[in-house]
Length: 172
Image (tube, rainbow, N blue to C red; front, side):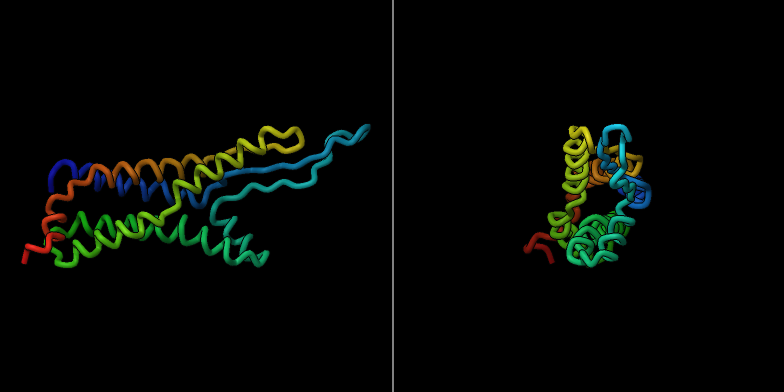
């Protein structure tokens, strides 16, 4: 394995280590309060959740489509993509390697993890600008962001020359 693929392998493993706390640690806290004269702040709503807790809550409130979409694009695809990339890098002589790489390339286009991070950050910025609404970003957001960045770096660093040779229709 060449040095680029060793670095890519290390980054992909690191990204999976960041993914777990990114999914399970609290990501965002939103608090809505009203200022009532003579009584002060009256809290109407407060919730702090991780991605996994948000998925559970969405299922509990029968928002199944949204919960399923977040589950697929923020949990299943990132885990599947990471594991399959480890297989592609680890099993150089495997005959289905090029097919797995093509599959990872296809699902990578549908991985919305990075878009999800941007969406959470924009929600944070939008709610932080309101006087009666406060938002706070927690460690889960930073772990998940680190997963996205490190995963993208790992894929970009991969040296795919040997995989691309097996993708060529002129090779037997």
